[in-house]
Amino acid sequence: MKKLLIALALLSFPAASCVGQTAAYPDFELVETIPVETTLDNPDIRNTTGVWVGMIGRAKESLDFEEFYVSHKAGEPLDSVIGAIIAAARRGVKVRFIADARMYRTYPEVIDSLARVPNIAKRIIDIGKFAGGVQHAKYFIVDGEEIFLGSQNFDWRALKHIHELGLRIRHRDAVSIYRDIFELDWKLAEHNDRAEAASLLSAKTYAVPFALKYGDSDSVVFTPTMSPKSLIIDSSLWDETAIVKLIDGATKDVMCQFLTYSPATRDKSYYAVLNDALIRAAARGVKVKLIVADWSKESPTVDYLKKLSRIPNIEVNFSVIPEFSGGYIPFSRVEHCKFIVADDDEFWLGTSNAERGYFYSSRNVGVVAQNKTLAGLLRKIFLKGWEGPYMEKVDGTKEYSPRKHGEN
Image 1 (tube, rainbow, N blue to C red):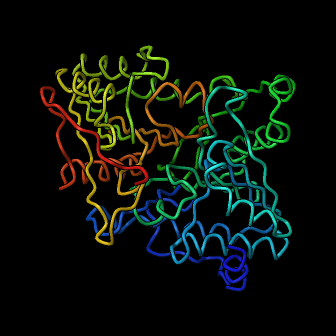
Image 2 (cartoon, one colour):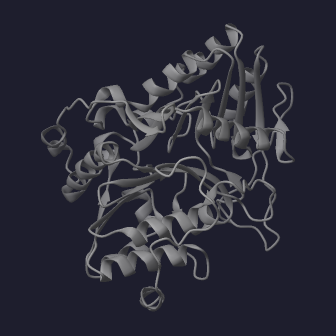
């Protein structure tokens, strides 16, 4: 690994190293990863690897990463991203990495190797000590003015073998909110002492929403969101609140996509909030469509999905991505996107799945936005999958077996 990092550091990475054409807006851009050997690609949306390398290549002062974990395989697209980070550090950019304590035990190598490079520092956060869950967010901030957030883990598979959606946002005031969360977690991760949390968590109210203006009549209006409820600076920005408000405001249709969706909790209690919001929407005539990955074909998750599919105005599909021709790859070949589109002009996109723990126990970030062009693009992405060859309708009467997706 050390030899690989040194080799990558010798490469040059131009500041605008990107592929494809940007979609819609220069400061608020949807970004995707498409599993190779599938038909899910959207030519008008740039791919993750090029966007990440370009953002990192533009860094002049700082790069702050808060990631669930880092998993690397030599010869895969993450090579160029790691090389860009090392190149940034070598030109004097201060780089900080926060990773989750539980996942770090599984994937320590890359983070430890990066931390040996001058100007790169790491801290491992144990969110379990503060809220009971994990550091599940996936985002990084460039120079305090540009952020990438979304479903993409810092994982070689997330750049090649998983369907992912993220956002690149350039807006200093909005990014400062996410940076406040990063700074809080950086401090929490220093000692991972629950007793320090109260003194480090200071309540604050942000002036939201923000607006990016494009011409006289077009704008993107957006608000950052975050979790868990007990570790956010402004309680009005909680992910769950934003998502429920979005669903409750829908008048025509709601399209949701998550890796997992389940009202079941780890302690076997029932989490009704999101389920009830979708049922309320259906009851008032809103057409609800939900896509979840076929990893959810296991009890009790599948039982709730079957029950939901029997409600009038609600349809549920499993997404089934074919295995790679080169052989089985664990924890891949799946749709990992996390977004909701309501009607024609509003959406939420983030790092949370649709389960209680993501909102109450684990660190996550997201954004809710109003804009017809971007909402239309997300609708297009959703319907391309919904109407494509990788969908399997959830049958309320069928028995399902879970799909293998872990290690051999």
